[in-house]
Amino acid sequence: MKIISIESSCDETAAAVVEDGRKVLSNVISSQVEEHKIYGGVVPEIASRRHSENISAVVKKALEDADCTYDSVDAIAVTYAPGLIGALLVGVNFAKGLSFATGKPLIPVHHLRSHIAANYISHPDLEPPFLALVVSGGHSHIINVKSYTEFEIIGRTRDDAAGECLDKAARAMGVPYPGGANLDKLAKDGNASAYKFPHPRIDGSPLDFSFSGLKTSVINIIHNANQKGETINIPDLGASYISAVVGCLTENLMKAAELTGQKKIVVAGGVSANSVLRRELSSLCKKRQLELYMPELSLCGDNAAMVGSQAFYEYQAGHIAKENLNAIASLGIDKNPE
Image (cartoon, rainbow, N blue to C red; front, side, top):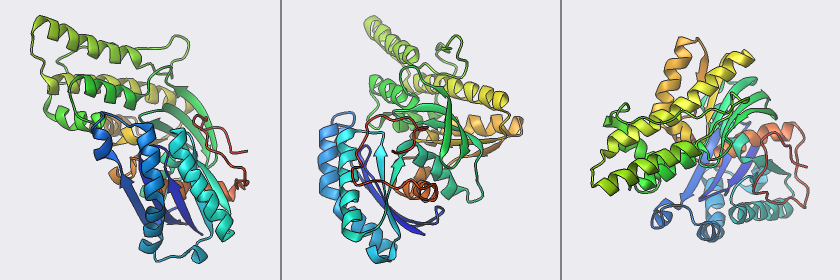
C-alpha cells in the first residue's frame, strides 16, 4: 500500500511516499530554519505563509521522486494534531482537497505517533509493545506503546518540554537558533561537571518531569555572572546543562522500564538527535540488557516519511478521516481521531 503523506505542524513543509509503513520511496522537506533564525525562534504567522507557498511544489516533488502519480497511490495522510494551528491548517486543508479531487481515503495522523513511527523505518523488525520516550520542543512523554494505535501516557512534563528547555537556555547563552542542536555541538568539548544544576522531582508522580526550574537556574547563573563582570565558559555551561536535562530524562525512563517490565526502549522526537542523550541511553540500556531503538538522525526532526509510516497502521485500524476533519493544536497521543 502506497501512501502520500503531508507534514506541516511547525516550520517544515514536508511530503513523502511510503509503502506498507516501512519502505520510504521519497521524502521531501522544505525547511524554514534560515528565515526563523533572524527572530531566534519560529514565528507562527511566517511559518503558515511559507507552508501555503511551498506545499504544492513539495507534494509534487515527493510524487516525482517516488515515480508515482495520484493514480498509483492508495491513500493520502496528513498530520492533523498537535502543532501550530495555522501551520496545521495548511496541511490539513491541502490534504482534504487532494482527497476530494482524487477520491482517495484521507488518513489523519497524530504528530507524536509519527515520531515514534520513524523507528519503524529505521528498524524494520521493531513491533509493539515497547516503552517510548518522546522528547521534542513541545513534548516530553514516557509512553507505553501497547499496539500501533494504542498508547498509554505514564509520564509527562508538568511544565516546559525538554526541547523547549534546551532551546531557551541556548538562547540565554547567546547560542544561535536552532538552539538545542547548536548547543549540542558547542558543548561537545565542555566539562559536564563544571556547573551544578537541580534535579527536579514530582512528589507522588515519579515518572513525571519538571524542567522549568532547570531553565531558571541557568538564566540565574548567566545573570549573576554578568552582574559581577565574570566570564562564563559557554561550552562548560552547555555541557553541564545538557547533562542535567538528559539525567532527568534517562532516570525516569529507566524507572518506567523497571515498573512496566518492558525490555524494548524506543526514543523519538527532535531531541532524540541529541548526542548526549543517545550516548547515555546506549550505555544504560546495555548495562540493563534492554533493547534500544533510536531513529536515524535524518528522521529525528519533523518529516513526512514518519507520517506515512504511522498512517499505514492508522488505516489498518480503520481510522479514516471524514470530510469535516479539522486541525487541532493540542491533543493527547492516546486520543484516536473522531
